[in-house]
Length: 251
Image 1 (cartoon, rainbow, N blue to C red):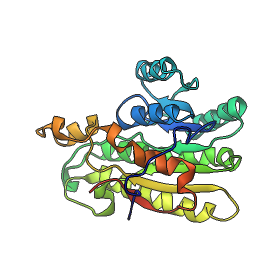
Image 2 (cartoon, rainbow, N blue to C red):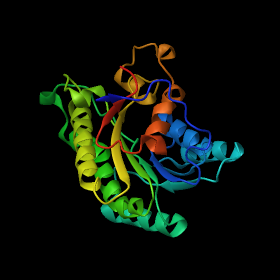
Image 3 (cartoon, rainbow, N blue to C red):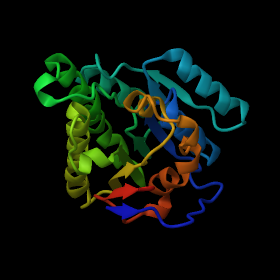
Image 4 (cartoon, rainbow, N blue to C red):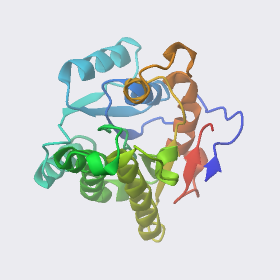
């Protein structure tokens, strides 16, 4: 476990001319990350299943005068590997490479005891949170190899690093994603310019947080905007040499 450098200040053009794919880009941390990456010079590919939400993020980026983003609708729950290959082929034809990939999309499932957990829901959560990032990563590695400095970011959580009661499929899927991150980092550390890390955003005001803790006063929680320096650090060149690490933004 490692912390983002204290008081990190990203350059305004930190991500200039970079092509970055963000999953779950329609709302929450994904939407804010996409807009933040665009504000720092990136061309962002917005991936999600709800087109109106993606269009709203697209419009905000374009209205701000940043590089024109792209929208790629994809439902991670129903997509097969062929769909990810088609995505990679489209990105290759349009941009010729991929400089960054943020695995942000996830579903919570139910917080309940393992002995009560619905089997179909278990499989669904594992698929969206672990198998889908694996398939997307596998399809995109050839594109990432074409970059001079590529970054892949998985999203971690405290319950991935230490299992806790009632976190079920979500905790298991996130632990698996961290392990996948470390495997990829080890495999890609030699003869590539691809670094692979996880980021644990900590407690943040998101829709998933409300699902997990419905009685909590969300107005008192940090916003997604407040954690963006960490997302910029790991996506940009300032984190060169860092790979295979789980970074924590806050406790």
